[in-house]
Amino acid sequence: MITTEQLKETEVLKNFLSHAPLYPHGFVKFQPGGCVMPPCYEKYHHRIQNEFKARDDDVWVASFPKSGTTWTQEMVWNIMNNVDLETAKSESLDIRVPFMEISGIIEPGLTKVISENAKQEKDQSDMSGVMPLDDSLDSVLNLPTEKPRVMKTHLPVELMPQEALTNSKIIYVARNPRDVVLSWYNHWRILEGYSGDFDGFFDAFLEDVGGYYSPYFSHNIGYWNIRERDNVIFIFYEDMKKDLKSVIKKVADFVGKELTDSQIEILYDHLQFDNMKNNKAVNKQEEIEGLAKLTGIKSIGDGKFMNKGKSGGWRSKLTEDQISRMQAWEQDRQKNTDLKFQYD
Ligand code: PPS
Image (cartoon, rainbow, N blue to C red; front, side, top):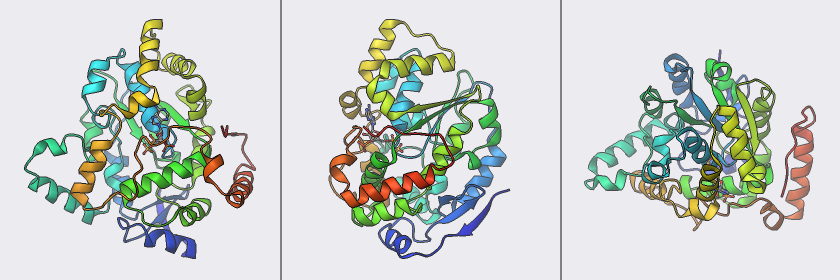
């Protein structure tokens, strides 16, 4: 049974929310687990619990945001679909691998603005890249039954449909928190119109209230603790950077697909950062532009969704003080786990 709890109104939280125009009602904590979400999520949570039914062959890509989800989605969809690059390049990833709960984290007022503006949009092509926002759960429920569904979620284990955690294949991708916080800040600037500076955002991240799906560590540790189940695999962004072919093989093996050497070569090339950055089926450029048009929220800064695509960027971006605060935070949050990250 899920309950919600108010967050402590600290200066750090107030500062964060004062720069987050899409969340006028702030955030609450969902218990058990303590996941930070907008209050409107509660209703969607119940819908997911009641309406979602796992299918025998379901496959999930799960993660804390900014951990390499899109990269993993594209890898997994291609593994599941015989490296069908023709479809992969022509159909948006958001349609092929829908994000189950996205509608639930959009405030109802904004959903209304989005759908009214969408109705007024005469040129339907402007909408082509936008993910199904008005009812993302439906887009998952309506995926054809002829082939396995591949779905995206950022839900922590406590909020996932429990039968999915036991019956479905789950590929969890994790990335070190120092690069995640930088990528997350860029995300909030370009997608949420976040107008605050990085320092305040960083403080909120360390206080475990830096945006929905926080806290970072309990999210990662929740999946880490179930990684030995036969239906779960835990992979790292940094390993994908270092040796993508091995990760492709490992994941293919996990989902029971055999790829030829030539398919692995083709997929490896397709998944390179520059190729994904220039591929409009996955780079989210149309989504960001479409969303800005529909919500009236403007991106701040000139960041891109496919922004840097590197490991270790934190070394030149975080101050010495931020690095030592982050290390202390990591040590504290990792006291009772053997989960370790790679930082370069
Ligand atoms: S989201 O919004 O949570 O789904 O974002 P997510 O996809 O998890 O993370 C986005 C970051 O992943 C980087 N990315 C890649 N890195 C390397 N190679 C490839 N092919 C690739 N594709 C996506 C993307 O650039 C974001 O990281 P940053 O550091 O912001 O560049």
